[in-house]
Amino acid sequence: MSSSQDYQDFIRSRRSVRRFMQDRVPQEVLSRILETAAWAPSAHNFQPWRFVVLDSELPRARLADAMARDFRRDLQADGLPADDIEAQVQHSRQRIVEAPAAIMLCLETGEMVRYPDQRRQNAEYLMAIQSVAMAGQNLLLAAHAEGLGCVWKCAPLFAQETARGALDLPGSWQPQALILLGYPAKISPPRFRKEMHEIVLHL
Image 1 (cartoon, rainbow, N blue to C red):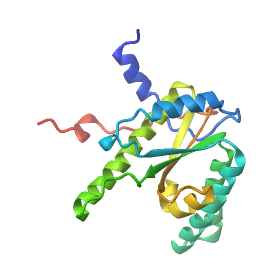
Image 2 (cartoon, rainbow, N blue to C red):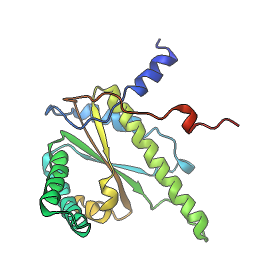
Image 3 (cartoon, rainbow, N blue to C red):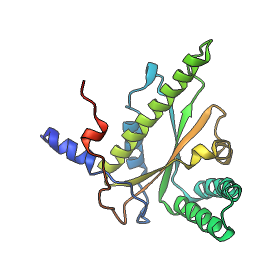
Image 4 (cartoon, helix red, strand yellow):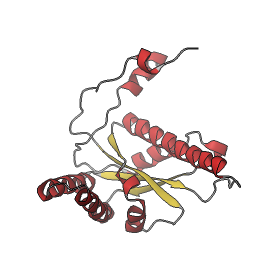
């Protein structure tokens, strides 16, 4: 049996992977990953996560093209030079299209508790987002256990309506993140981590 330190080391060995081999991710592997993701804890046990699997190029290209239009518009509003805008837009689009698979992580808002005051309603919404994020972390670790690499892209937060429309998602599904995954072509070395005394307070 593996020791607790083995599990700690496994979690710490996960990396964000942005370059993939073109090998297709088998359906049974994706199914195992999603089942593990769905075992995350959630507020009220509402399990507000929804997963949209994009394992063929056509839906990924449709999503990438739609989000590219929003990205270009935002960069133009920022006043960036045209060449820089096109380089950033094409780089972002290419990463989505060339990944062997992608999973859109969404928040289902229809089952949230409805409070009469805005303070508690805001807290309810944040709890739902936290629940979805925990499912996303489960997904990343489950993929790592399968020998896959992933990268979490927050871009859908800047284009939620566009992403939902491009994939024809239900109106109560709010895109939160796009996770690109595949078998890694390159694994980066570990990045800087803050010292424990900077982030931990013992009382």
